[in-house]
Length: 110
Length: 119
Image 1 (cartoon, helix red, strand yellow):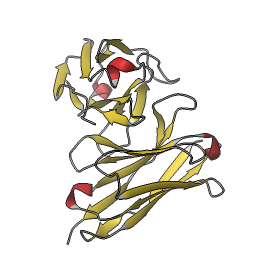
Image 2 (cartoon, helix red, strand yellow; image 1 turned 30 degrees about the vertical axis):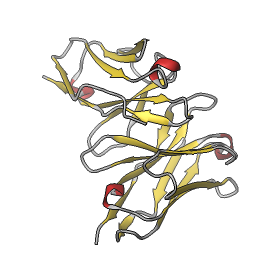
Image 3 (cartoon, one colour; image 1 turned 30 degrees about the horizontal axis):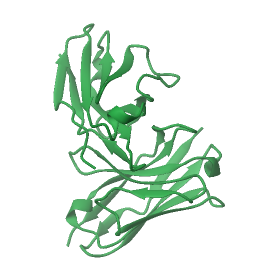
């Protein structure tokens, strides 16, 4: 049950687009379309932003989108806003019926 | 509205046990799989365990297998996490989370309860 691999940090200026990658194996990310993404502000509970690789829950801005290629999933945030500054985590279902998270990525809006 | 409220956290000595509770409201609890997820201070999220809607399927992270037990009482709309043989590495905020109905992912989270393992 190794954690999925995410970059420790990414940054972008307001209005720009950024992408956060999430790399796993064929036993998790690559084997299922069950990757989800979470946004967490300091001291708060995580919030679901994307599920099933690319689906957005109601109420989540369409500036957030997800995709997957092979063993790597990606979260893209377009039109960066100051409020997007937060930690982002990916998660995947696994072949053992467990779940696994990525190590998290700190997004800084410059 | 959906509410998940964790309780039972606190300071516990190494090697001791502790039971966490997650009280659910605002939805049909007995229809949803539920999870425990933890976050050590300043660290990332770590998935801990899942229990199916009826308790018939249970899975654990390797780091807690054999020490932690997840359970639920659908008549009380409550999920539990019995933690034993606690160590410093178990120090974390413990969140309960609801799984998306019929799908995967965690669509609602509680605010968490802090467990500190220290002598």
